[in-house]
Image 1 (cartoon, rainbow, N blue to C red):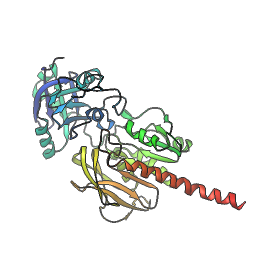
Image 2 (tube, rainbow, N blue to C red):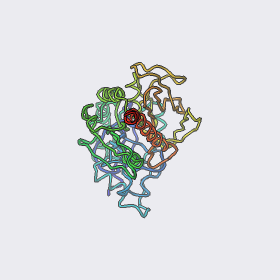
Image 3 (cartoon, one colour):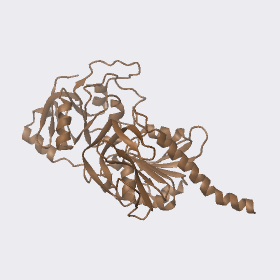
Image 4 (cartoon, rainbow, N blue to C red):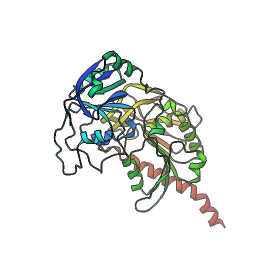
Length: 390
């Protein structure tokens, strides 16, 4: 490994951070964002929500525990690039199957090490997430003006639809664990393995569906509920997913959405979404559940949010009845959850599966299970009453 080959991180405002090549050599472009988790780097880089983004880790030491075959959240690494301060020179964990550096090389992920990622984070907090590029190896010697022009020619996250890149292309079915209570259709917009495991563990047969599934194809599976996953991109560029969700809501099927799914529920209800200056990413975001007053420390990965009234119930502009904001971020008052009061639908902006933690919000999967069970009882009651009357 050529650990001390040169590399440079270039931001679209012209800011530059010089360091060393880490992972594959070459050039990569993406939106520069920062993640504040001190653990779970393998889960972070394999989270499909990070597609199209160069992720800066604020924790200084990365790679200590290597990588293994059990912790990935999807089939591959999705970050467009990876920036760290001090990569571990050795792997020290009995579960490790290899090093993070070697994994980045094998999957062609261009990275940079040896930069002050916290200084870069402060800059992004002040200036906002922006287009960026990592140039390493021979590409680090390109003219700085040429590098900046390449960065500024890259795609902006606003208006970008990345769902087709991360979604499955064919249906995948995961059997329910234990007693089967029903089935759930999961629209894969970048779903994580932990999410599917938690749904299955609650007695739900899980049908993972491609992002371009039609309402007729979805209903043909006769699901008892629908789930929208996390994922990358701008929710304003996902009109087909919004239309599909509106059709699901009109069918009266119970719905649960997380992260991107929360934003799409907001749009399906007729609300707007907007881009946050630098987003929420990491595993230490404080969120209050307004129903209980309980504060949860939660895992986040999003750059967009729902625009909704923070106090009181309001009418859905799209005609789905009353809605309330169920959760709010205590750092900046961003909407973190929606609860429909007249239809069986709710969502949260964060990650209740939260691999590698925290697990304060895991109860939301139980809430979804209860919603499905209640709906099954309600829909079966008329048939039961008719049978008894005969």
